[in-house]
Image 1 (cartoon, helix red, strand yellow):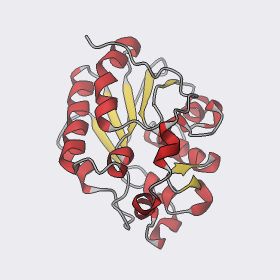
Image 2 (cartoon, rainbow, N blue to C red):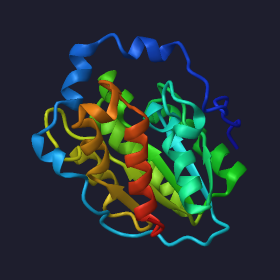
Image 3 (spheres, rainbow, N blue to C red):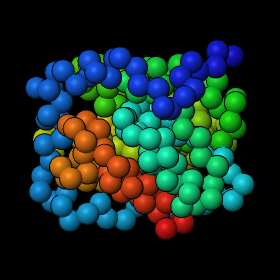
Image 4 (cartoon, helix red, strand yellow):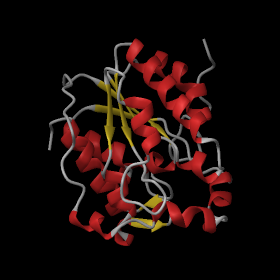
Length: 221
């Protein structure tokens, strides 16, 4: 069994986040999206039915931690209030897919979730990690989570300079039973300047939009 995650507090803001903001020539293409995003994120492509006592585990990067926001304004906290479900936020600012995968077993042991929701991939893109590695990591996460009897929902990021979700998410997830991919909410949020605090982080309004979409996936909105 792997050691429990050292990143337990989603209010932590490691110094590495500041470093992420520096290479803007790499970041900006991630969020220059087509104007079609202004029409709204649409409806989810499915629904995940959970019992009211179910545990939901949120993992990933600063899109989930709520970078520079109070913890209660991050989308997992909003989802908890909207749905009445127990939602635990164990994302980490700056986390790559490698780092999320490394701590996954320990988090599953600790929380025994019925559903895991992840935002993964943005830091891989920023650091120019091979796309094949990110895809393989996502697939391994899906295999591990579903083998435990949980469902796995990934909020996918867009391709650079496009409003469509990056194809690596589709390649990694579409043939694994129990996995779900939201293809539109993050491209929508990143396509609207009013929903972002900076080129790579949703603001409080952006987190509300993400939370509403997650609640829709859960049939509680």
